[in-house]
Length: 68
Ligand code: SF4
Ligand code: SF4
Image 1 (tube, rainbow, N blue to C red):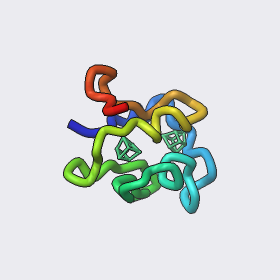
Image 2 (cartoon, protein in one colour; image 1 turned 120 degrees about the horizontal axis):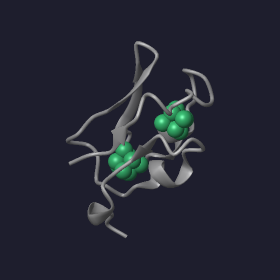
Image 3 (cartoon, rainbow, N blue to C red; image 1 turned 90 degrees about the horizontal axis):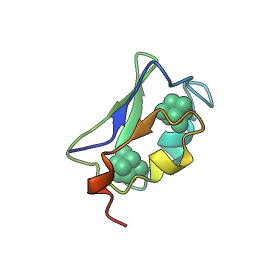
């Protein structure tokens, strides 16, 4: 499992250079590709830091997988 991005909610905060979720991820599992947020599944440790920080509630992992 990994963080899921709802592109209908994501407003690309911070522009394509420094989105909050990219900055927040401790594992560098999030990147911008073709102006969209992409999560690399095998790097994501399901910490949900991106979910806590996203102002649009556009990225999260299923609650039962939050590791802390
Ligand atoms: S859940 Fe954690 S490790 Fe996974 S993409 Fe979000 S911040 Fe990165
Ligand atoms: S923090 Fe949320 S709104 Fe900002 S780029 Fe990431 S998913 Fe989109």
